[in-house]
Length: 269
Ligand SMILES: Nc1ncnc2c1ncn2[C@@H]1O[C@H](COP(=O)(O)OP(=O)(O)OP(=O)(O)O)[C@@H](O)[C@H]1O
Image 1 (spheres, rainbow, N blue to C red):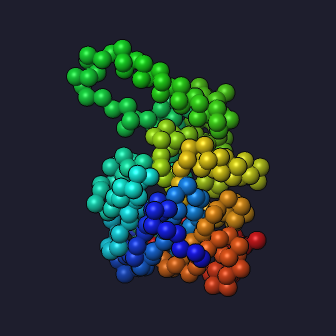
Image 2: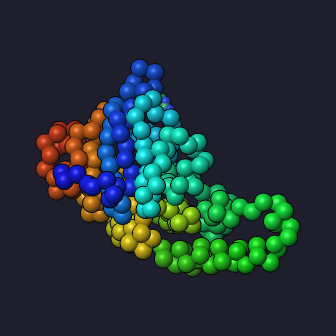
């Protein structure tokens, strides 16, 4: 694979390792993601995909290695220096393997939760700037509605999130990430639980998100058709180690990858 130039890189994972007890879940893993690309992380069950996501977002602190995020203005941040709640302020957001919405709230309110850290005002500001706060809230609501429209679920905005089909809930989760103007969106198995039609629609949306929101996207996914269809580059891991990296075509024909998947349901087609 042609290595990207430094200025084109958005995320650089270098020699990251983490062990749980005696088990090395991620072992000296390195990869770089280009700005404004869709990058896929694949591997059999238990390969360490979610663990590396957690090491990037600082939910887990890696035992060794570094994770650098490079902003479009060239500023570089070692995410390992940050606490988990500060990672979002760098423009990095994620969705979870299992949808994590506030089930009792309406769809629009769930999306508005995604603007919380942008909206935060000190108490004195809240007392003296009521007009401005109202205008900000209106603007935020309009933005949320715009995102719901982009994802074709604006007509459902007042429905309770927990009452909606899984495909809709997944879209709401994605909508929430878009509220914070992210530079890097991390999607953990976005197609899990979706049917074929929903998966195709999701693939189309993820490509559009990349273009419309000018974001870089990192995803873990077992649905190989989705991965091969939308990813610009893919990293395949097995037992926490990188076994291959390249374009979808290169990954599909890689013998090591095929061996790792032998007997797995997710065939490389
Ligand atoms: N908090 C933890 N404590 C102990 N072991 C863990 C922890 N998190 C992950 N592991 C172990 O690390 C290994 C990698 O798990 P991980 O969830 O990252 O795999 P994965 O590739 O995301 O799998 P899947 O595709 O099934 O979601 C597994 O053996 C898992 O049991």
